Image (tube, rainbow, N blue to C red):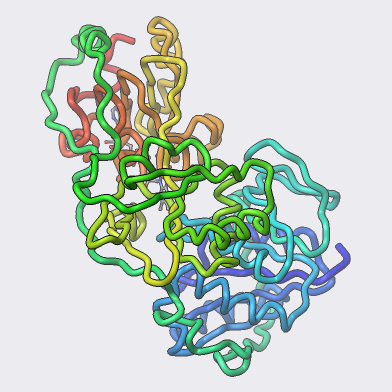
Length: 457
Ligand SMILES: Cc1cc2nc3c(=O)[nH]c(=O)nc-3n(C[C@H](O)[C@H](O)[C@H](O)COP(=O)(O)OP(=O)(O)OC[C@H]3O[C@@H](n4cnc5c(N)ncnc54)[C@H](O)[C@@H]3O)c2cc1C
């Protein structure tokens, strides 16, 4: 394909992040006139950077002590400083790193360089791409494309030779010290800990009691509160999308900013005009793309995928899964503005949701039939969506949807925090798992220890 491409990748523990690997493989498949891989990595990653050159691409490593501790705002600044020197036609990125899923860096790069952005590429050909949201776009120059994990990066040929890796420092790319690393990063982690959000006291029952337990749970009306009311409030909280309740809990006053169909430029003008200090964005595809762009334009710090909030000493405290979801982190922003994208529960039409995990995938048909008898909606864990057994739209979790039915039944789901963080709004959680130590039982009201095949589905 005609043109120059830059592929941004993250190297971690001697490996290329698999989502970025998919972006690079896609660029290789398209066969651009020139492909440059750009990575911001410590010197320890040079062997893997060198091995990438064997794929016939140029590799640039951005390496400087000043880059340490960069959040998304600083990372996007550093990458775009380097990219602007390369003057590419296309920029490819992976959707997320394995230890974080903010998805903010690609739209921020787009904003900083004046590019368009297309997120969630699931399929592509020379003429264009199809995204996770089912939309099609032509390949257009000056666009940042963000790829899902749709391909595995090829191995270099046995006969390939290593090329040269160019290492560039802060000075080489003309980046200002105060915009890099920790100094240039408005977000600060206050503490990280094992999350208590969504924890429940599990009562174990026998496999044959599943139907009765679902029936009992349906009679209970209450759906658990998603976000506890903070003791302290902020003077005013602005919000975009369907977040009135959350904003009202956090602010003495809550005011909506209508962002639907508007550009980052329009919203930024309003944010600056009203001197917005705290702005919450609902996590729709449109706003997840818009929020980082507005943050870059208005000098805001931004925290993605927040699941809870508090207020401490007049500052918003944002809670989100961190470090690959093993822990939860409380984060605050220093600087003039604080933005957050908020995980919202999508209230489906059914009172009952059945979620199929990897441990139950072999019983999908029986579970679907059983679900029909309750009028239950079928969802899944990410392992099942990644395996292509169910569509991504059915995935529950940090990178899927948040659900809040009266009853949530998890079949063969281990209960990773990225999954459980999205079911805290369910009235009753019932879990079926053959491992008595599975984490899901700490997040369930009712547990059945047993094999899915023991359940009379
Ligand atoms: C940044 C990031 C974002 C993520 N986002 C999401 C997300 O949105 N949603 C999500 O779900 N995950 C997400 N994940 C992945 C998450 O960490 C887990 O890997 C995933 O949830 C595991 O899916 P699972 O429970 O179906 O599979 P597994 O972890 O493999 O668990 C399968 C379970 O089934 C049980 N089992 C096996 N066989 C049987 C049987 N015959 N009968 C009964 N039980 C059985 C096992 O004991 C095990 O507990 C994310 C990860 C990262 C790093």
